[in-house]
Image (tube, rainbow, N blue to C red; front, side, top):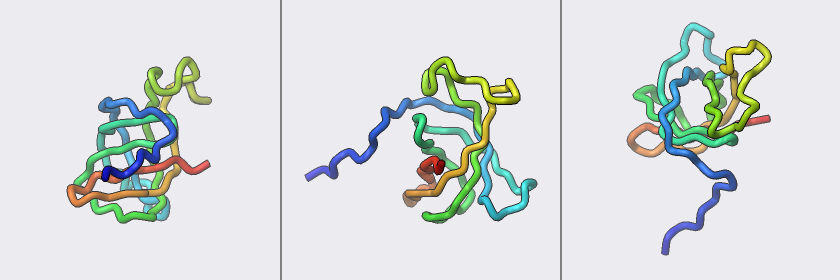
Amino acid sequence: MPEPERRFARRMIMKVPLRFRPVQAPANSEREAASMNICNHGVYFATDQRVDEGVMIQVHLKMPREVVGDDVENATGSGWGRRDGMVLHRPRRACPTVRNRK
């Protein structure tokens, strides 16, 4: 029997460039990746970097208008923003699922 859907926000399949690093790591340790799917509560992306479940990470990305609506611009006017989140799931192929922490 399939596992019930646990997501409460609709995910959009889209490739959005992003940068990420563990919260405790130096700023110059950021890695680049791209989302596989995204919503206003989290992002799923692929990386060859080992990121364990439960690790807090910072993700820098420009949220697409399709996800957040007309409120795309942040305080800098660039649309790029930082989100802190926790790695919730890391399948064998090393694609972490990150949930925003508020």
